[in-house]
Length: 463
Image 1 (cartoon, rainbow, N blue to C red):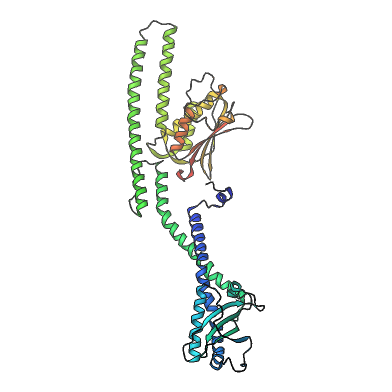
Image 2 (image 1 turned 120 degrees about the horizontal axis):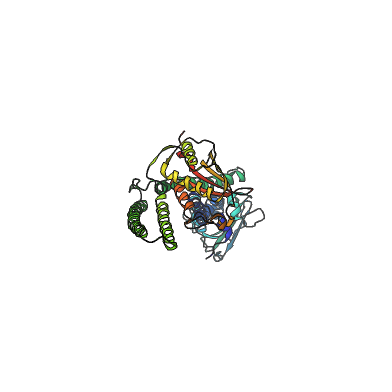
């Protein structure tokens, strides 16, 4: 079943909003379903005062009734007639009607001093024109009158039918005041109570979820963090247990990767070393030089792959003077043609010095290889600490900006002529930035060139 788009837009995004909507809607639905019960009870309550009044005024008529005598003195809005048989009873299966009949029988028995076999023929709330206004009369929007018609058996075998009308009992207050009070107490206060219950329930439910989310975010920076405590409801304990098991599997995978790196470093570079030794025994020539270049390329590729795999690991976080680290790296790579000027200061920050040095080296070498007029700017912003590396070169095609940092992805030929790269330089820099809780941003500059920015979270910066 496809949900309409409008309903999807109205559906709350937060757990509190969803729970509140479900509980408020359910409460209102239950309230409407229970209105039929309330109506039956209210119907009898509204008629209580008129029924007792009609019974009090009808008792003398019943006591003096004689179908063969003259007419009786009748109160206003009352009609009396005699019948040889019980008049036809109006079919009405409402429970309120039964309550009214019992009340009328009890009231007449009290007034007559004896049991009265009363048969209720008709009961209705009407307006001044005699039209039924049952629902509106319950709220008092119009003046209501109780219209009762009932029959009582006489000693001579006849049935005395009495048809009387009395005004509905009322408090005298404004109808709108009473309606406002009803809506306030029945609906508004109930919704407020549901809101408070939802708030309490969501806070209790979200507390373990927030703890689980914090632990999941913490895995990115500290895989060896303490496991989640197994407490709370059964579902929360199961989720914490599954999270702890996942953490242990991740730790095992990282350890396996470390073993794999060690094996690759030893098992691949050892035969390369033997190949170099054997290559030295060959006679000089074109084939020897080509083999030498192939061995160098294989060694560089293995080194870059290993560097990429190690880049996501933080081994030694410490307070580092980032200004000094950047200045030293620029000084090592600067030349007469490219002096690599540095502007701005950010102070100390908690990083892995070796990884950050490798990140800057990759970015600076990449800029020097493909562009000119390279400069570095350090900036402190509300979102974190930036290291901007600007150049005036060919830039990167806009369609490739989102994928250029993927492993083994290289830009177009204008940035890769005779480069000898394998598409891992930017990937390594991005993994190093990500491992520090930051990110690598690339943006083409106006007038040509590229800006590569390393963002480190401000929370890690020292004052």
